[in-house]
Amino acid sequence: MAQLALGDYPDRYRLANELHARPFPVLEPPTRAVLLAIKEPEAAADRDRTADLEHLTALLDRFGAPHPAPGANHYSGALGRAFLKWEMHTEFVTYTLFSGQMGAEPFSDEVFKLFPQDWLAAAPGKLVTSCILWIQPAPPEVMEVMVERDLPVWFDPDSLAASRVSDAEAVVAADFRIDAAGHTRIAVLAKPTIDRHRLGRIVQRLFEIEVYKSMSMLALPQARSVAASVARIDRNLTDSVTAMATGTGREAETLHELLAVSAEIELLSSTTAFRFGAAEAYAAIVDQRIEVLREERIAGRQLFGEFMRRRYDPAMRTCRSAKARLDELAARAARAANLLRTRVDVANQAQNTEVLHQMDRRAALQLRLQETVEGLSVVAISYYAVNLAATALGPLAEPAGVDKGHLAAYITLPVVLLVWLMVRRIRARIARREAGPGH
Image (tube, rainbow, N blue to C red):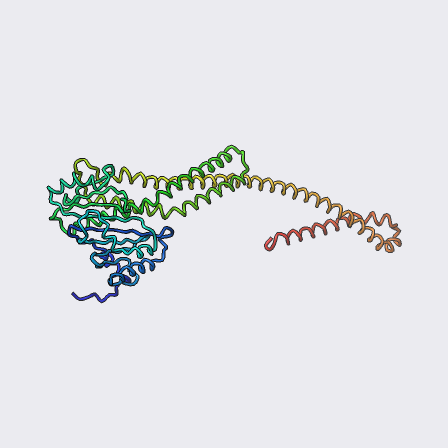
């Protein structure tokens, strides 16, 4: 078929190949598999990922194995007597080893010896979980015997979860406890006829249940800490709202307290948002992986799904409850702050209105005072103007037989009128200048 003469969208091939980059393992029982999940204690999502690649490369160099591609986030290949599968996730990395040549003891940690001790000590992070998964071929009649005889010996009977999966092609069992060597144990009893690809999918899902269960549980300590902080902040918020409702506190002080509460809530939200969000996503993966196992009950034993509902879901509900209470508290603090700001604004508006009324009264008083001053000014100016006019017109009035007293009486009214008109004209001109252009 001829290739289209059309340019490819950026990363088209890389994104398409990503769907096939992590194939399920193809397994033949008996097989042992071990898994390590390693995570930086702080800011794991923003870690230097080159350190993870360098740590993987150091392990491969011990066995003379090929290196991963630059910037790779997954790798598969032979590692001595085992097969290694390495994956880099958002917060953590996983190392999985598969081997069919390791002893007869069911949960021997011999496979872990392929990880050198000094190499483990130099890992860029801390161990989140380590798991041993033992796959044993078991015909139907042997499978029933092993379920009754061996599972209660290998696992804690009080915590044991066991079920038939994938159309009863296999039995899976685990107690999700950490044994004396520091590992979680999972057993898979597989019919000899099971498809190798199907068995690989079962094993991959069991490992993912263990890893994502462990990762989601990291949120539980933060949830408990947040719950304690929320209870304390809730009391402070209630006190502030009570003071606001009863009017026993000063509004400025109450607003300051509410802003401090809001800031503390925002700090809690920002520091826990990623952990709670990640826990929610991991829990969804755990539920989905259990669902696709298609569990069938074995002689009244609890299923993986039942174990999770009884012992795992309450922890996740605690995390969701802590997040919900934090969100509710943030909304309450915001409402209280908005209400108090509204009260402060109304009070300020009332004060501003009173100030305006006082300014109006002062302006009216100033206007009356100004009119009084203007009247006095007219009188004063007129007095001096009349004297000046009388002095200036005296020589002209004497030939006409008008003495200075009568002359002053005759010119007083016209002079006062002229002065009054002049003052009004000056005041009108000043008012037009103050009003600005166009007035």
